[in-house]
Image (cartoon, rainbow, N blue to C red; front, side, top):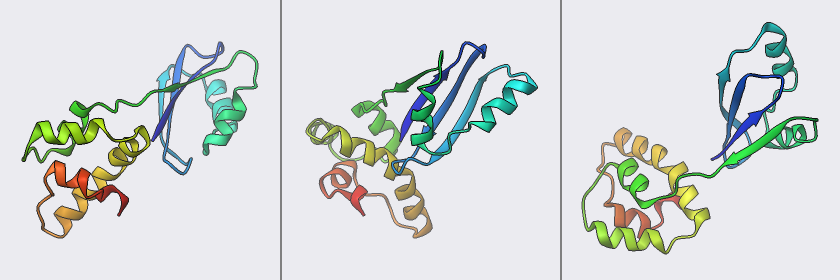
Length: 137
């Protein structure tokens, strides 16, 4: 997932956009008070795909900043929830993973949790999840 903050001198506040790994908008958050006119203008140029957001950068006064994702082990450990097995070993596996794989892990975990609940099976130990590369399924 990639997240961006949209700044414009015409808006008091900012707009936040989140896109999945295919570039489709999955979340939009307004952190500003918009007038009706601003609301209409925003939605007339609405970037449903990441490429459209990138094109908006060419408009005068508009700034778009990508937010770096938190790819820390601590976030993974808390997000995974099934805190069993050897934490230190799991942390070492995490440290040796690429940034790209860490992003994929976070994108997959929610779906993996739902699959486990649906199939009434226990989640794998965190170290097994990482070593066996479950996120590639």
